[in-house]
Length: 430
Ligand SMILES: *Cc1c(COP(=O)(O)O)cnc(C)c1O
Figure 1 (spheres, rainbow, N blue to C red):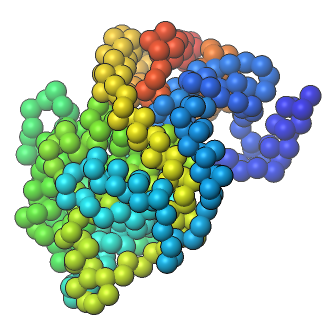
Figure 2: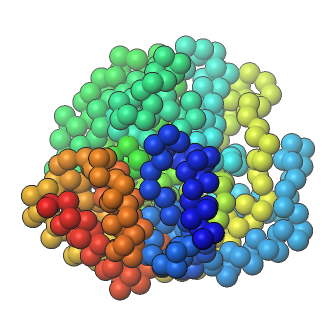
């Protein structure tokens, strides 16, 4: 069988995310995808609960996105961005400026989320350097964060969550406050931000910027926190004169119930990173946006040149598809869809809270998380088979079973996902 051959070759030669080639883990071959369904080489169809890591918000194989890609291919798939520009980049940047907070008027088109974080960090350091504050080169962030896998991004991601510890010696040392613990349904306590504030006060001469994921900490633990924390962070950044970088790569484009999570705190960052859902999951593209203040700060010592420029920066094909994806999003009733998903996830996942292996169930927007008391790492191989046998695609990590489905998912398909989560919990309870 062709598919068996592919699986064997894959296991022998191809690295997957955080995977081993000497102890390959369970893998499935996808031959096509349509709407919220993946078709596997063995003939099975499974419902996608992951949106291919937050990205395929409109579902797979969408005619509008397909048309955008095909027509752009016939004009030009790529051209270098040094000294050249094109309509897809101009259109996309205009849309991004229109849909984000008013001060965010300037855009760097990066080629992946991690790179958009690298660019954000460079912007912040250049901002101070150009003004003569050469000691302001550190970032302040919180534990349990995740900002990407490249070295600069790794250095501001949680140092202890197991992903990066072996690179500790080569990573720049930044400052980590405790992860936010405040919850939306509890009263705000000043103690929630006390350590963060103290770190900022003690190190303000060395801090260029704060970097944080707003409201949802994604790959660092699928943790949610309250908007008041973010308001306090903004106020402290203003008070002690450091820039605020918000990483909305996971939360951006409606996932938490607002177009951007920062809207729920009624604040605006100095620098904003977006990615993941930007092209509707079609191809890799991200953006770093910033305000007048940042652009002018970087220009203080003369040219104002931002020192970054990847080969595939501003790729026209990705920009054109991103334009179509943003149009689709804004024309759709995404808010109604995300609200309906939130309501259904609340109704169908919350009852699992009574199971004794479950530590907590939490829902925000189109994100549902079941946190267990124990990690599932040792069961991952049979769990992955078990999940596909339930007709769904869910990828638990550590002690977390979570879903963030495409916004277009039907209520029946969503129930299929939540029922499968129940089956996983039951199976793990045995
Ligand atoms: C996924 C993610 C990144 C990294 O994006 P890549 O495209 O994988 O490089 C950065 N920050 C957050 C919050 C993310 O979820």
